[in-house]
Length: 274
Image (cartoon, rainbow, N blue to C red; front, side, top):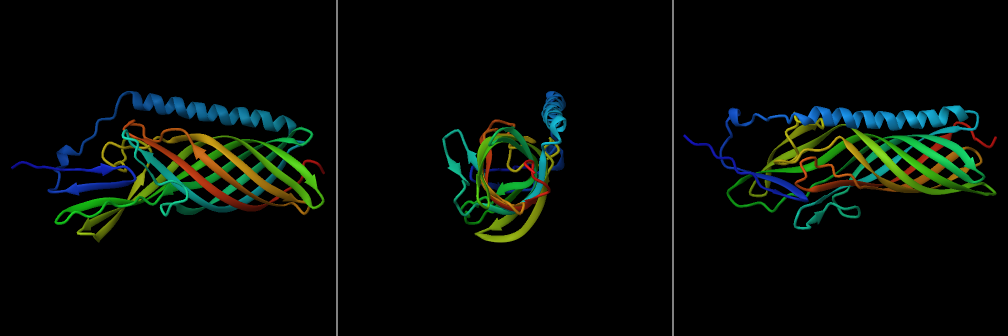
């Protein structure tokens, strides 16, 4: 008896058409020999960046101020295939709504110029639009992707004093380390959801993959712009727009990037100019 397993993936939505169950012996995956070496190299790079950051901050601890804040995030995961098809951008109904938390570090550089790194826990991802249902076929369609990151934006900020506080604005790069994630997979028939399963994303070759042949890179990087206000009573508000430039698809079959918009509210533990 022969087994057949047909899978279809269209970027912007993820879908597989199932005709017969695949036998277990066909599910084995071979881990490329270079995978462990690549992961170790990238982990060392991320650790080195963080250590350099700590080495810069701690010698000037007398001038550094710290703060805590959290807020609301609208995120999207952009997907682009070789034919130029794009989907899931900020401003569409595919945005994922979630929360984030920040540790703020203010380091004076010169007059109103500051170096402001953040240590941010954030959830990125998107709702993935399902394909139109095909009559008489069972389809698997991923409908939600959540990726949890520890992110370090490295912003250069300008602070302009006013009567009630300081206007703050700036920009800089960010690097992010993927902790884990998940996605929901719907089994559909004639447009009706029959069942939903949740699958983990561990950013390694043990992952089932969010689509046939598509597995995600653990590391993300990009740039962001930020604006905000620091009140004299130490309360802070802010907003930022972030755009990823690193391709999350380590198989290179598509270009997958993250972006998000966030608003935050928090407080400073102290002020570097007090």
